[in-house]
Image (cartoon, rainbow, N blue to C red):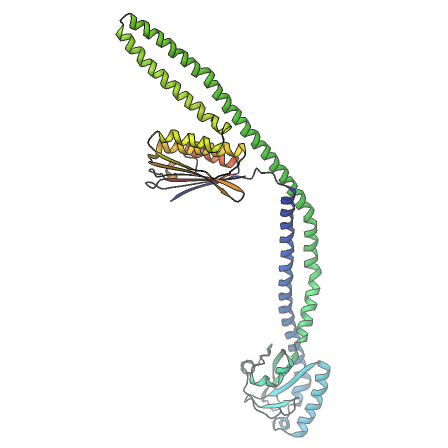
Amino acid sequence: MTIAHTAGASPQRTNRSALARHVGQFVLAGLLALVVLTVASIIASRRAGTDQAIRDATDRTAALSRTVVEERLTPELLAGGPDAVQALEYRMGQIIETESFVHVRIWNDEGLILYSDQEGVTGSMSELSEEALEAFATGEVVAEVSNLDEEENVLERDQGRLLEVYQPVTALDGTPLLFETYDSFRNVDQNARQIWWSFLPAVLVPLALLQLVQIPFAFRLARKVERAQDERAELLERVISTSDNERRGIAHDLHDGAVQDLAGVGYALSVVSNRAAGNDDDRSVELLAGVQVDVRRSIKSLRSLFVEIYPPNLQRSGLQVALSDLLAAIGGRGIDAVLSYPDGLELSAETNQVLYRVAQEATRNVVRHANASRLDVEIGEVPGGVTLRVVDDGVGFDLAELGSGNGGHFGLRIMRDLAIESNGVLDVYSEPGAGTDLRLQLPT
């Protein structure tokens, strides 16, 4: 399938509502961009807040483990001595209060909780989480947002999301242990808000100001586009009017000039032929009869030509009658030509001219090149426009063989130019052996 597509810019005049609509769309797009950027900044700041809160909790946990915890990890504590546990518990209570930790724990590598500030947890066993095992294996701190579904966090499920830090520590006898802290997730929200508010003025405010500055420029640009479209519409109207006047002038000159002259020649030939017949000059009579036939044929061709150039029915009776006359002439050449035209369709004179000229050129191509037995011409209505469709069952063609683009065929160039000048969309569908389907859409 070969497809040719041509479109032109709108020559229609814009109105104030259209101008306001376009500027409103521009403003709405800017506001939408601001909303998207705001949402993205909130998400990014929350992630940054989470990362910062985890770093803060990690730093505080590491400092606490070095300055307070490790020096109290005595063999007595590892053995569960009450005095050692009580001493650590007293010190941890002070730290939890000052550092705002929710809970703290000390683990060995078997899952035994050597110490917890929660009542009844010290001395219990629990399965080590993947993060705890990773900290034991690597000797490096591991931090995450707590998974409250895990067994070790069953007592924290009523406290919401927490930040959990596993800090490897070493007892005084060299035993590897883990010091675990739980920090409130409120720090994440606080950090997110702080980060968001810190760059909000630097990012969103300039964008908002830019949007406000652009609105007057958008109005100015829209007005310029409106004026340019109005000027183009006026130019198109003048071009169509000038073309119409030129065609009318050419048709008038043909009718009053060449056609009348040839008609006079025909009368003169008739007189000469009669005289030759009176003199029994059969040879001259025969020659003059042949010339008379040629003159009448030329007169008929010229009359058909000026009717095609400036169809009187299009001006007097409208597009439907002019197209009917056009197809009636084609029907006399052995082609079954059918016209479909909607009832009550009212179009401007300029639109009628373009539709007729494209239909005229398309049907001329069918007669000359398509070798078709049927031709359908259909006028239709679409929202905001009118359509012309010319379909034949002829031999079809391949546009690629006609030259580069759509300009390889003179008839197609004519129709393409008409479409561009009238803000039309011209599509040609054809395939060798499968006929041609030409479609034109014009704004109304």
